[in-house]
Amino acid sequence: MINIENIKRKLKTIGKNIIFFDEIDSTQTKAKELAEKNIENGTIVITENQTNGLGTHGRNWYSEKNKNLTFTMIIYPKCSINELDGITKKIAECMRNAIYNVCNIRADIKEPNDIMLNNKKIGGILTQIITKGEKIRYLLIGIGIDVNGTNFPEELNEIATSLKKELKKEYQREDILLEFCNLFEKYCIEKKII
Image (cartoon, rainbow, N blue to C red; front, side, top):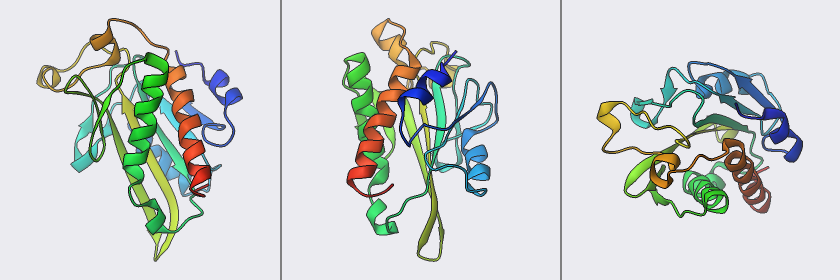
């Protein structure tokens, strides 16, 4: 079980407010609903089991229950839409660096939104910018990282893997989440996104 209170205690803006679900259809869908209600900036919607996770191009995102990181972050950017060009790649870089800092393994980025290890996918990023005219209303950042999962559907065995499968070791999921939030918040402050 992810220690939510421990994470919240250690973060400033991004991840200070975490909404946890033992099971939910999609963190992205729930985050969008909450963002429409102007929930706290930097809120994270996270779950132990996502039953209908959203991937890119309308695909579903598979995640093994209680083993991985599946979450969506809600950001209300104070920058222009042009200043968010390349944001998905920056998010991927922050996650790659978080994995390196926690697990001491260098993952690769397959642009624009896949995190790869040994030529197999361990994670994906789904970024949605919701606008009204030229103004950004909010940014949703959905992330799935296969941390400790080992049971993949047969059709994914050749293309997907997890940190545990590749490194033969279990990892604390909250350590990766904490490190990612700190790195991404630092980037957001530098770029005046938040």
